[in-house]
Length: 112
Length: 115
Image (cartoon, rainbow over all chains, first blue to last red; front, side, top):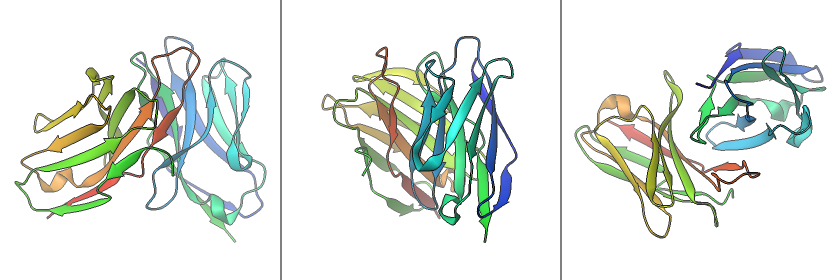
């Protein structure tokens, strides 16, 4: 069965600092992995997805993630945090029935 | 606008009551997925439909049921509501299963408050 684990329920960074949100996956087959962002009182917006093409995936709003099979990781990064990045971020893996299995989420706080 | 429409956006109802949440998928998407988001449980998969047929079931309570209609819209019915059913209910749609397309689009959700 597929699953994802997000390390750190809360991450706090200063504006302009590197953002690193961690996600580790478990999958018995080559995984399809996703990062979604949820702003307060809003739905889920796709940031980026890995579908077995390039291991470094670029997404919207300057975010990118690198698929590392040896580490079973798919960490999300952004070189310079902006105040508008404050939100909750979810990592997800597609399972064998094509539904998404989500991690528990990481709330990103950006300090001025 | 993501293309997935959920109605209503907010719903306040009393314990013991029954409500229906509606989802219209993005044009061309055949699969619909329902998720429940609560503070203590996170994002939990409830049920999936593909072209009118149930494809997968998650941790969906027996008091909850869903269906997908011929026009592909879906409804989630919640009955005998309890305080613990208060949550944000999301619908998502996708064109899978179809090799090569892995887009999942989420609606803005229905916030259910049971009082």
